[in-house]
Length: 216
Image 1 (cartoon, rainbow, N blue to C red):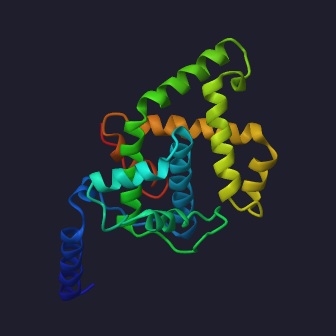
Image 2 (image 1 turned 90 degrees about the vertical axis):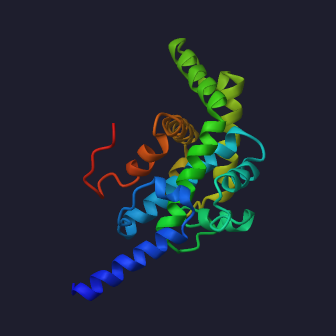
Protein backbone atom coordinates (compact mmCIF):
# COMPACT_ATOMS: atom_id res chain seq x y z
CA UNK A 1 0.00 0.00 0.00
CA UNK A 2 1.39 3.45 -0.93
CA UNK A 3 1.79 6.15 1.71
CA UNK A 4 -1.04 8.20 0.21
CA UNK A 5 -3.36 5.19 0.14
CA UNK A 6 -2.48 4.42 3.74
CA UNK A 7 -3.24 8.00 4.79
CA UNK A 8 -6.59 7.86 2.99
CA UNK A 9 -7.46 4.59 4.74
CA UNK A 10 -6.54 6.04 8.14
CA UNK A 11 -8.56 9.18 7.43
CA UNK A 12 -11.58 7.10 6.43
CA UNK A 13 -11.37 5.10 9.66
CA UNK A 14 -11.16 8.31 11.71
CA UNK A 15 -14.23 9.73 9.96
CA UNK A 16 -16.18 6.48 10.47
CA UNK A 17 -15.26 6.40 14.16
CA UNK A 18 -16.31 10.03 14.61
CA UNK A 19 -19.68 9.32 12.98
CA UNK A 20 -20.34 6.29 15.19
CA UNK A 21 -22.33 6.50 18.42
CA UNK A 22 -19.71 6.94 21.15
CA UNK A 23 -20.74 3.72 22.93
CA UNK A 24 -19.63 1.62 19.95
CA UNK A 25 -16.06 2.70 20.63
CA UNK A 26 -16.17 0.64 23.84
CA UNK A 27 -15.82 -2.47 21.66
CA UNK A 28 -12.56 -3.01 19.74
CA UNK A 29 -12.58 -3.02 15.96
CA UNK A 30 -11.81 -6.37 14.35
CA UNK A 31 -11.93 -7.41 10.70
CA UNK A 32 -15.30 -9.05 10.11
CA UNK A 33 -15.20 -12.85 9.69
CA UNK A 34 -15.40 -14.59 6.32
CA UNK A 35 -18.83 -15.37 4.88
CA UNK A 36 -19.46 -18.57 6.85
CA UNK A 37 -18.14 -17.00 10.04
CA UNK A 38 -20.30 -13.92 9.52
CA UNK A 39 -23.41 -16.04 8.98
CA UNK A 40 -22.67 -17.92 12.20
CA UNK A 41 -22.26 -14.65 14.11
CA UNK A 42 -25.53 -13.24 12.76
CA UNK A 43 -27.36 -16.45 13.60
CA UNK A 44 -25.97 -16.47 17.12
CA UNK A 45 -26.89 -12.86 17.86
CA UNK A 46 -30.46 -13.39 16.70
CA UNK A 47 -30.85 -16.54 18.81
CA UNK A 48 -29.69 -14.70 21.92
CA UNK A 49 -32.27 -12.00 21.26
CA UNK A 50 -34.84 -14.75 20.75
CA UNK A 51 -34.01 -16.11 24.20
CA UNK A 52 -34.46 -12.63 25.68
CA UNK A 53 -37.89 -12.40 24.05
CA UNK A 54 -38.80 -15.73 25.63
CA UNK A 55 -37.85 -14.36 29.05
CA UNK A 56 -40.34 -11.51 29.01
CA UNK A 57 -43.43 -10.48 27.11
CA UNK A 58 -42.91 -7.49 24.84
CA UNK A 59 -39.20 -8.28 24.56
CA UNK A 60 -38.72 -6.49 21.25
CA UNK A 61 -40.14 -3.26 22.71
CA UNK A 62 -37.70 -3.47 25.59
CA UNK A 63 -34.87 -3.95 23.08
CA UNK A 64 -35.91 -0.80 21.23
CA UNK A 65 -36.06 1.11 24.51
CA UNK A 66 -32.59 -0.17 25.34
CA UNK A 67 -31.28 0.94 21.93
CA UNK A 68 -32.63 4.43 22.66
CA UNK A 69 -31.00 4.48 26.10
CA UNK A 70 -27.68 3.53 24.51
CA UNK A 71 -28.14 6.28 21.89
CA UNK A 72 -28.12 3.77 19.04
CA UNK A 73 -31.18 5.31 17.36
CA UNK A 74 -29.37 5.92 14.09
CA UNK A 75 -28.64 2.18 13.78
CA UNK A 76 -31.83 0.80 15.35
CA UNK A 77 -34.47 3.40 14.58
CA UNK A 78 -37.62 1.36 15.07
CA UNK A 79 -39.10 -2.14 15.18
CA UNK A 80 -38.65 -2.56 11.41
CA UNK A 81 -34.95 -1.71 11.45
CA UNK A 82 -34.36 -4.13 14.35
CA UNK A 83 -36.27 -6.83 12.46
CA UNK A 84 -34.13 -6.26 9.36
CA UNK A 85 -30.92 -6.60 11.36
CA UNK A 86 -32.15 -9.83 12.91
CA UNK A 87 -33.18 -11.20 9.53
CA UNK A 88 -29.49 -11.43 8.65
CA UNK A 89 -29.76 -14.77 10.51
CA UNK A 90 -29.65 -17.41 7.71
CA UNK A 91 -31.94 -19.71 9.71
CA UNK A 92 -34.83 -17.27 9.44
CA UNK A 93 -37.79 -17.75 7.11
CA UNK A 94 -37.34 -14.10 6.09
CA UNK A 95 -33.55 -14.27 5.64
CA UNK A 96 -32.45 -11.09 3.85
CA UNK A 97 -29.06 -12.40 2.61
CA UNK A 98 -27.17 -9.32 3.72
CA UNK A 99 -24.28 -9.12 6.14
CA UNK A 100 -24.17 -6.86 9.17
CA UNK A 101 -21.70 -4.01 9.15
CA UNK A 102 -19.22 -3.74 12.01
CA UNK A 103 -21.30 -0.98 13.61
CA UNK A 104 -24.53 -2.99 13.30
CA UNK A 105 -22.93 -6.07 14.85
CA UNK A 106 -21.59 -3.98 17.73
CA UNK A 107 -25.02 -2.42 18.24
CA UNK A 108 -26.69 -5.83 18.54
CA UNK A 109 -24.02 -6.98 21.00
CA UNK A 110 -24.57 -3.90 23.17
CA UNK A 111 -28.36 -4.26 23.04
CA UNK A 112 -28.08 -7.95 23.93
CA UNK A 113 -25.70 -7.32 26.83
CA UNK A 114 -27.67 -4.41 28.29
CA UNK A 115 -30.99 -6.26 27.89
CA UNK A 116 -29.49 -9.29 29.63
CA UNK A 117 -28.44 -7.08 32.56
CA UNK A 118 -32.03 -5.93 32.93
CA UNK A 119 -33.16 -9.56 32.98
CA UNK A 120 -30.45 -10.80 35.31
CA UNK A 121 -32.89 -11.77 38.08
CA UNK A 122 -35.12 -14.07 35.96
CA UNK A 123 -32.03 -15.47 34.21
CA UNK A 124 -30.42 -16.39 37.54
CA UNK A 125 -33.69 -17.76 38.91
CA UNK A 126 -34.15 -20.00 35.89
CA UNK A 127 -30.61 -21.35 35.98
CA UNK A 128 -30.86 -21.99 39.74
CA UNK A 129 -34.12 -23.85 39.14
CA UNK A 130 -32.45 -25.91 36.40
CA UNK A 131 -29.68 -26.90 38.82
CA UNK A 132 -32.17 -27.77 41.55
CA UNK A 133 -34.29 -29.93 39.24
CA UNK A 134 -31.18 -31.64 37.90
CA UNK A 135 -29.92 -32.37 41.43
CA UNK A 136 -33.28 -33.96 42.25
CA UNK A 137 -33.19 -35.92 38.98
CA UNK A 138 -36.55 -34.47 38.01
CA UNK A 139 -37.70 -33.42 34.52
CA UNK A 140 -37.03 -29.74 33.95
CA UNK A 141 -40.49 -29.31 32.46
CA UNK A 142 -41.98 -30.05 35.90
CA UNK A 143 -40.84 -26.61 37.01
CA UNK A 144 -43.38 -23.97 35.97
CA UNK A 145 -40.87 -21.19 35.23
CA UNK A 146 -38.61 -23.42 33.17
CA UNK A 147 -41.55 -24.93 31.30
CA UNK A 148 -42.91 -21.46 30.50
CA UNK A 149 -39.52 -20.33 29.16
CA UNK A 150 -39.20 -23.48 27.03
CA UNK A 151 -42.72 -23.03 25.66
CA UNK A 152 -42.12 -19.41 24.67
CA UNK A 153 -38.73 -20.14 23.13
CA UNK A 154 -40.15 -23.08 21.14
CA UNK A 155 -43.02 -20.90 19.90
CA UNK A 156 -40.67 -18.11 18.74
CA UNK A 157 -38.24 -20.55 17.15
CA UNK A 158 -40.98 -22.48 15.33
CA UNK A 159 -42.71 -19.37 13.97
CA UNK A 160 -39.57 -17.62 12.75
CA UNK A 161 -37.06 -20.24 11.64
CA UNK A 162 -37.01 -21.97 8.26
CA UNK A 163 -37.76 -25.72 8.65
CA UNK A 164 -35.96 -26.39 5.36
CA UNK A 165 -32.67 -25.55 7.04
CA UNK A 166 -31.08 -28.83 8.12
CA UNK A 167 -30.21 -27.82 11.69
CA UNK A 168 -33.54 -26.06 12.20
CA UNK A 169 -35.30 -29.24 11.08
CA UNK A 170 -33.32 -31.23 13.64
CA UNK A 171 -34.33 -28.88 16.44
CA UNK A 172 -37.98 -28.85 15.39
CA UNK A 173 -38.11 -32.65 15.36
CA UNK A 174 -36.36 -32.95 18.71
CA UNK A 175 -37.85 -30.70 21.44
CA UNK A 176 -35.25 -31.91 23.94
CA UNK A 177 -32.41 -30.56 21.79
CA UNK A 178 -34.27 -27.31 21.32
CA UNK A 179 -34.68 -27.00 25.09
CA UNK A 180 -30.95 -27.56 25.52
CA UNK A 181 -30.29 -24.78 23.01
CA UNK A 182 -32.60 -22.50 24.99
CA UNK A 183 -30.68 -23.28 28.19
CA UNK A 184 -27.26 -22.74 26.61
CA UNK A 185 -28.42 -19.32 25.42
CA UNK A 186 -29.52 -18.46 28.97
CA UNK A 187 -26.06 -19.34 30.27
CA UNK A 188 -24.47 -17.11 27.64
CA UNK A 189 -26.79 -14.24 28.50
CA UNK A 190 -25.64 -14.54 32.11
CA UNK A 191 -22.05 -14.39 30.84
CA UNK A 192 -22.89 -11.10 29.12
CA UNK A 193 -23.88 -9.56 32.46
CA UNK A 194 -20.54 -10.18 34.16
CA UNK A 195 -17.58 -7.84 34.63
CA UNK A 196 -16.69 -6.46 31.19
CA UNK A 197 -19.36 -8.81 29.91
CA UNK A 198 -20.09 -6.98 26.68
CA UNK A 199 -16.40 -6.83 25.73
CA UNK A 200 -15.89 -10.51 26.51
CA UNK A 201 -19.04 -11.41 24.60
CA UNK A 202 -17.93 -9.34 21.60
CA UNK A 203 -14.50 -10.97 21.53
CA UNK A 204 -16.03 -14.46 21.88
CA UNK A 205 -17.92 -13.94 18.61
CA UNK A 206 -14.57 -13.85 16.82
CA UNK A 207 -13.32 -17.08 18.39
CA UNK A 208 -11.25 -18.84 15.75
CA UNK A 209 -11.13 -15.69 13.63
CA UNK A 210 -8.66 -13.72 15.74
CA UNK A 211 -5.83 -14.67 18.03
CA UNK A 212 -6.47 -12.50 21.01
CA UNK A 213 -6.42 -13.12 24.75
CA UNK A 214 -9.56 -11.88 26.47
CA UNK A 215 -8.78 -8.99 28.79
CA UNK A 216 -8.62 -10.03 32.42
